[in-house]
Each structure stands twice: as structure tokens, then as C-alpha cells.
Image (tube, rainbow, N blue to C red):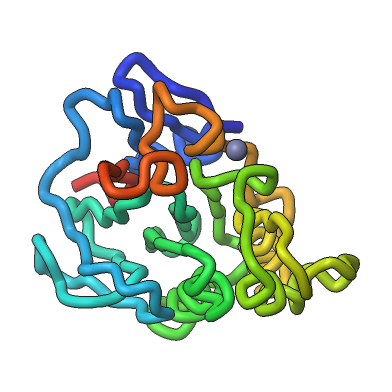
Length: 221
Ligand SMILES: [Zn+2]
């Protein structure tokens, strides 16, 4: 369940229940946001995950950040792409992921979960995932060159060889389930960035004059 607070930041109940965790999905109206110190990447629509130790600021190129170090706000910037936050409730490891269609077809979200397991011993059943505000499955029109590449995650569809619409959040949800995260621990239903102009920047809506929202997660320091 996503709810917007007085700071105009969307929060997820399952994360709010964890006292050691800070998180949020920013809007264009967010105040006193994001928390510092910030960690971020030059986002390149890749499947590259960066493990953060003590550093802050820009840590180079990539599209996912992972840490078990407290006091580092791992952030991603999005306009229509999908921000995804992950937390390991048992091992206290967190991750922030930027997934557009290119990141989605490269399975960046499930690769990030796998990296949490490899580096920190996370078990998939201990992870919580929140798939934040991005362009919705009704608004996201794509050509066959994009649609066809999402076919592995939509085997029930026979219209992916022509222009159509696709639901990137749902593709990521299915990838995370395939990786072993229990469906009941994956939270969706965030608002659409294109449908709700008063709250969100949308690249699809405004093209060249688009700002970005910041979303992120931290272990309280
Ligand atoms: Zn929409």
C-alpha cells in the first residue's frame, strides 16, 4: 500500500513498519527531500549494480545501488521509468533500482536481488520490494522493437509484435517473483507519472522540459 504523507512523499506501509529503515518515493511537490547524505549514479539504462560502502555522492555509472552501511541514502532519479526499492528485513541490506524498458529487459531488479544474496547473504524470502510511481500500463505506448523484447514476461500476450502498450511495473513484479521474492512481499499500485501531472514529472508528457523525482532508501544512521 502506497500513501502520500504531508511531505508529499509516497511511503509504503511494509517499510514504515521497520524502525531501522528510511525510504520514500518523491514527487514534484516533495519538501525537505531527499535526506542527506545522498548516494546516486549516472544512470545509463544498464543492469549494473554498485555496492556502496562508505562513499557518498556520485559513484559512477550504473542503475542500482546496494548497501548494508547505515546513514547512506541510496537514490534513483526517474520521470517515467520505474523506481524500485528493496530491503532485506533479516540481514538489513537495502537497494534502490532504476528500471526503464532497457533495464527491465536486462532484468536489473532481479539481478539486484541476486547481488544482495551473493554479497550479503540475503534470502529471497526475507526481501520486501516496492515498485514505485512510473508510467502505467495504459499510458506506456511502445513500438514492436520494445514490445517484443518484453515477451518473456508476458507469455499470455499475442500482440507484442506490433505497436501496443506495456506495463513495466508488472514486468518487474513478475521478474521479482521469478527470482523468489514472495508475491505478498512485493508492493505495487503506485500512481502513474503521466496520468497525474500535478504530482509527477513525466518524460512522455513534456519531453524536453522534464524534471526528475528522487526516490530512495537508507538504513537509519
Ligand atoms: Zn498512466
